Every structure is written in structure tokens, then in C-alpha cells.
Length: 155
Image (cartoon, rainbow, N blue to C red):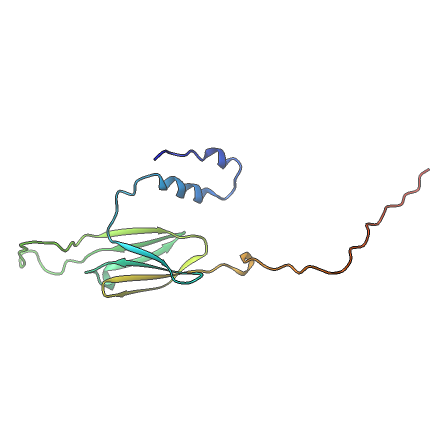
């Protein structure tokens, strides 16, 4: 993938720094991060849900943090048994820690999180402030009066 230089756009735009940073990051590989798998669903007009497969983790081993348009989900597996008591013949269930980040759009906030059957559900709501919602402007049916001419005395 080619690198796109956005520097000419910086001269004529204000407040789009975050957008250009996100576009720049799309061109960089994400270190092939595929664990844990997740889904992003649109559940309503302004509601979304992120579902992550976190089998083997419980509520105490997971943390969710939303800060500055970034949602971070971390999982750190606690050691349950001392290593000398258990001898694994085959270990197929990973106990690896993970950290997954999601970029959130403006006015998107986390409303709830739940863990059920090894799936972590994070519910999101896009809450647009009233001042930013489109509003209807009434059109007046009154006739527009002719512009008034300025009278001046010429001497």
C-alpha cells in the first residue's frame, strides 16, 4: 500500500488532525493482531455493540476503558495453580494477555458491558447533542417588501 501525504490538506483545514492521523494509521500494519476475535454490530439507528470472544477470562481479569475517542479492552489472565502441581501434556488453551483498541467517533459513549458464555458485550450509543442535530427552519409566507431607496439631496 502506498503512503499518502496529507500535508497539503493541513494548510487549508482546521480541526481534522484526528481524521488524518486515523487515515495514516490505516496504511500501517496492525502487527497482525487477531486475538481475541470480535464483531462490531449496528443494533439500532444510534446504537452499536462490540462482541469479543474472551473464553477463559472472568470479570476480574478484564478491564474496559474509554478515553479521548479510544476504547481499550484489556485482558490479563491470573495464575490459578502453582506450576509444580500441574504437568501439561498438551496446552491448547492460551493464557495470553491481550489489549484491543477501538477508535470511537465523536459523541459515541459506552453505555454497558456484560460477560456471558465467554462473550464480552460492549454496548455503545451515539448521543448527538441537540445543538448539532439538524433543525427545520420555518419559511415565512409574508411578501417581501421592496428595498427602500436612500434619498439624498444633491447640491
